[in-house]
Amino acid sequence: MSRTADKDLILYGAPWCGYCVVLRKKLDDRGVEYDYRNVDDPEIRLEMNKKTAGNQTIPVLCRGEQCWVNPDETTLKGEVNV
Image 1 (tube, rainbow, N blue to C red):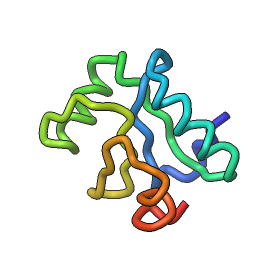
Image 2: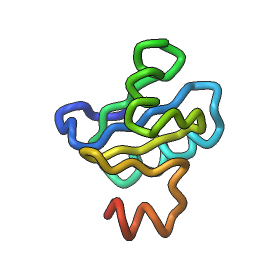
Image 3: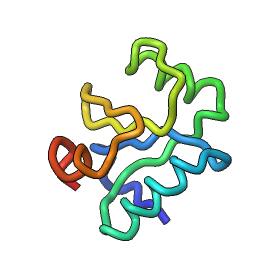
């Protein structure tokens, strides 16, 4: 389960999205703290869209103003550093 103490890393996703489920598991398995936000909530989707210039693809992982859409393993280890 995600830990929300550190709001630095935000994961936008949905429970029906297989890629989102896989990314959450990777983060959880690594002990990474993040705030999970379900884009099925229209306000959360709008929040994500503002950060991603209207992008509709999930999952989206954000740290500050930097966001990665469906980040692969190379991005997670390199740019995101998790």
